[in-house]
Length: 637
Image 1 (tube, rainbow, N blue to C red):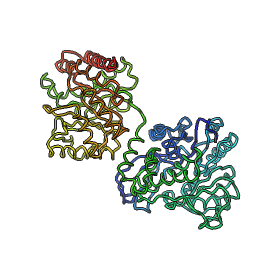
Image 2 (cartoon, rainbow, N blue to C red):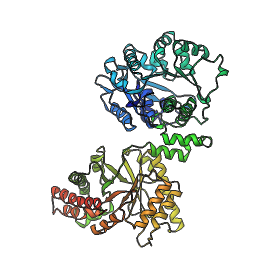
Image 3 (cartoon, helix red, strand yellow):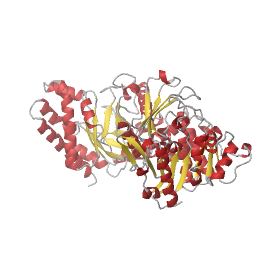
């Protein structure tokens, strides 16, 4: 295959939104809540191949509504080229609803009546774009109607003319061919001569055909697998990937074996099954990782079987597909991982290698998540505490003004609480800023979380872009009882973040009056890592260069996927912060600062005392913020 093309694979076909029931064991009518994921076989494969490192693209249609936007954004975040996703102004994005009753029962309803992706037409197919890819993949549903058949065969014709490999994933869903009642999406096979003939009309142009035994049956027009394979071989010289469930798969390049027992499969991986839907898309994503990069069939099948095993053990489909690093780790350790969904290291790698790709090289953070301090400030100024809410919205405007004047180019950060700052949080969410949000009960020691012990329930209502920030007054030489109490709370919070998908920032401040040596913070981080807690971010006080070196070495060894460290301020004078910034110079792990009281205290007092108006307050805070940005930028001097 040509290595000079812009794309490795273009996926043409279904793109939808999956709604998966969260109550395992319930029939659909009793499910109380659903998790929303990317769906549609072609979209899943585009997503999965991109996650595994291929240059993939999606060719489909979505509706002109927020579910269509979701599909487009999910694919884009995974690295998929979405430039050929057409917005359909007359149809809605398709939906799928799935329940998990038991290991063999998955009630499934397709909401695809006149949906956007089935309106793909010949006008949407561009010859030059097809020629820009090594391969074109089409899934079976897009041969099921006159219009999508015409679009698909046109794409195949362009592919053959350009030397682009043609892949067909049979992906047979009887309901999508009109062979069952509308609500019966679970049925996987019904014999039908018309469907068989329809599929056979495109097999001659294929280079790779992929299907389960049932899908081979429909493509070959026989419920005997060998007979069906022989029919397919009579029509095409394509390689045939036959999926055999837990047994693995086989790849047939030449003659069809005379008997099923003559087939020697590439062995699969035995795991506990949670949800089989989407496992085939993960399987094919893994296979294409090998096939499109010139690996032999054994290696490609190893990738495929491992991807399928991981996904059947998890709740979702596309989001459950592993990254390349995660997949390689699993393959190396599969014999000791009977439950991928429960393996700590595998799930950690999934968490940190599949999170949103934005790299925060620097964070210039304005922190105003303070609750206790603002309340006390309002009392001292004889101001109504209800004014704090507006004050925090003005701080957002000050941060925006300062960032604009300083030319931060997107590296703007804020820390905002939801006690007084919910309106401010709503103002910044969706802007692309780095947003931290506290969960600790202010000044608590031992650590307590706001809203009680059920932190997982609280996080369910938080936007995923909000980083969970938790301040702990912590010293590795604290009394054993206090250490254990605080550490249990940290572990509970970390588990809740892993489950909810939020990033965690852990802020460590040695308690006032404690002895702080060069190794104190390093010992604190090491002890927390020993608990199995690996935060995405750390927030730490200024420290010596010796301490920075220790911290850098510990994080690089224990959690190399850590996003980084941001520095806190503690109401320090500007001169002290300038010295702290200098001490961090040259340590790549330090990504910036999140400082608050040094920036906002005096302007806030003046505003609460009605000494300055909104405009003057915004200007004063912005000026202080810009000064700190300048000190950070000049820390190397």
